[in-house]
Length: 415
Image (tube, rainbow, N blue to C red; front, side):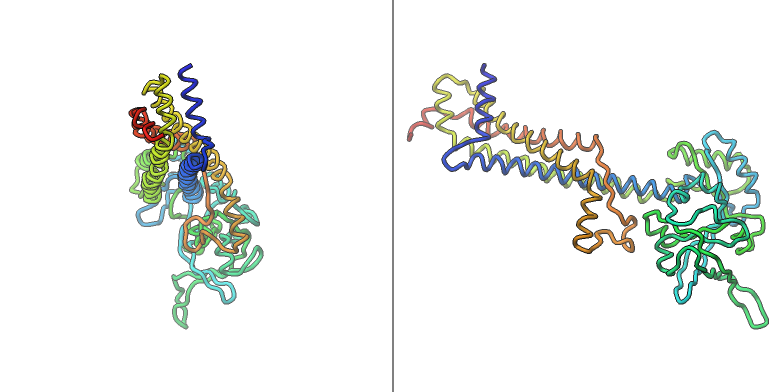
C-alpha cells in the first residue's frame, strides 16, 4: 500500500493541476528537453553509422579487398599468380587489371581520368561495378571493340551518353617526322555507372583489359591482380600468404591500408560526437533538478500534511524520486521513438527538404558521399537510453532528499 500511494502522488505531481499549472508546465519542459536531446543523439549516431557503412561498401565495391602489383608495374606472371591466389582457401576470386592515366576528350569538353582495363566476367567477382550500371552493360567491354564505361559524373562533364564517341589521349607520345605527338584512340561509350561517390563517378573509367594493354603497350603484362576474400578483416594476412607462396618480389596492399584513415577518422568523430552530445543529454536530465526543487517549494504544505498524518521521510523521498523518474522515462521513451523514426526515414526527409528548398545539403563536388545515409543500431539506441535514464534518476536524488528533510512545523508556520 505504501508503494502504491507514493507512486500515485508522484504521478499526480507530474500532472499537477495547481492554480497556475506551473508545476505541470516545467515537468513538460523537462520531458521535452530530454526527448530532444535523446532524439538528436540517436539521429547523429545513426548518420555516422550510415556514413561508415556506405563508405565501406562503396570503397570495397570499387577497390577490392586486396591487391598485388609488380614493383615495376609490369606483372608478367599474372596467370600463375592468379592460380596461386585461387588455391588459397581465404581467396574467393581474383582478377587482373591494367591501370593508367588518360585525358578524355569529347567535342570541346576535356577531363582527366584513371583508365582501368578489366576482364568483365572476372571483374564482377571482385567488385560491384556490374551492379551499379545505370545504362548499358559491362559485358559490352569486349576485346577489340574499344568500348568504354564511364562514371555518371564523368559522362556529364564530357556531355556524352551511351553510343557517343570519346577520344582517349595518353601522355606518352609517338615520334613522327613532324615531331612527337600524343597517342590517341577513339572509344565508344557503351555504359554509364553510378556508385554514389564522387571520387569514383568523376575519375574512373573502364575498358577491356586487352584494349588497355594495346593502348599502354604492355603486351601480355598487367598492372596487378585484385583479390576478393571471404573475410575482409583477414585480408592483410591472406594477401601476404598469397605473395609468399608465389615466391616473386611483389607489392601487396589491402583495404585496411589504402583507406584506413577514412575509417579511423569516422570512429574518432563518432566517439567525440557521442561525448559532446551526451553532455547535452546530461544538461537536459539535470533540468529535472530545478524542476523538482521548484515542485518541492510549491508542495511544502502537502509535504507537511503527509508528514503530520504519519508519512515517513523515506516515503516523501520516494514520491519525488517517482516524479523525477516518470519525467526521465517519459522523455527518454519519447526521444527514442522519435529518434528511431527520423533515423529510419532520414534519407526521405532530407530528399523532401532538398526538393522543396531547391538545395543540395551534401554537394558531390565537396563531400566524398553525396547522399545522407542513416543506420540506427540497437546497441547505440540502448546505450543512449540507459545513460539518459541513469542521469535522470541521479538528478532526482538531491531534490527528493531536500523534500524528505522538510520539517512540518516550519512548512505550516505561515499557512
